[in-house]
Length: 238
Length: 98
Image 1 (cartoon, rainbow over the protein chains, first blue to last red):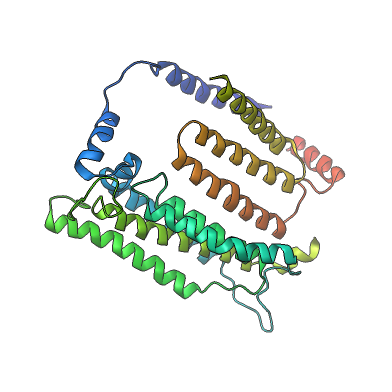
Image 2 (spheres, rainbow over the protein chains, first blue to last red):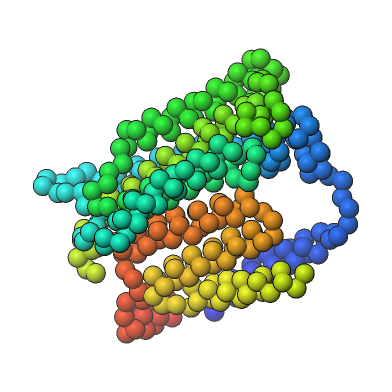
């Protein structure tokens, strides 16, 4: 009873401040804040037509590096927690029964298309909506499709680790080159090119391609780790 | 403008209904699938409200990856929220005593 009272008390305090902050936001009024600066400057200075990408990779590029690091740590931590030594004579099996023929053929048709879509999304991150995180997640869903439809489809963890590390090193070293050649970390040192061109935006395209590879390999590794490390005793109960 | 409002209302109803079902349902598999439906409705709403970046992320992460990871977890544990009604009553009594 006392526990419930405290829960309601804390919830009402949090709710009061949320509602209070919500009603203090002015709606429908013109506000000249930092958003307008980004919208006006990103097509002119950086020649990037997608302002969201300009903010994520250039104006707030250091935050993106932090996010990538957080994702890397999460994937590594999950791998180290879920890792289990194989007992003698134990086979790594993801599922008891093979999936149906319809799913297998359908996934064969869909797999290259999803990979193509993911690659398109992160290569054109500075031109159209999307970017490295989105494209990487799309590619990870493609490998998930193959992992659940084929029991023998294997993902090489060595390759995943290498792709992940090289992409991370590319991101960080581009930042350091900007620091050496310019003034700040992750400063744009390449020519920006024409607006709406594929080779525009300087380092933004390269960084988003690196982030796309990194996110795709990390999420694929996470799914593969979770799928492989079943507890056999729990399956027997079901 | 009315043609834009109607699908948004339908989406909101679907999303809220799926969210309530996810909380109420005792079968965890149904709950996870309905959270996937919530993510689907959210991503469509993001797309209608002109945020295609967020819609892409929500569709890939929320609908596909999170749902699959939860389903794998359920496969390795139990499918019911509480396996036995008698057991749950005993546990609730124990909780009262404490």
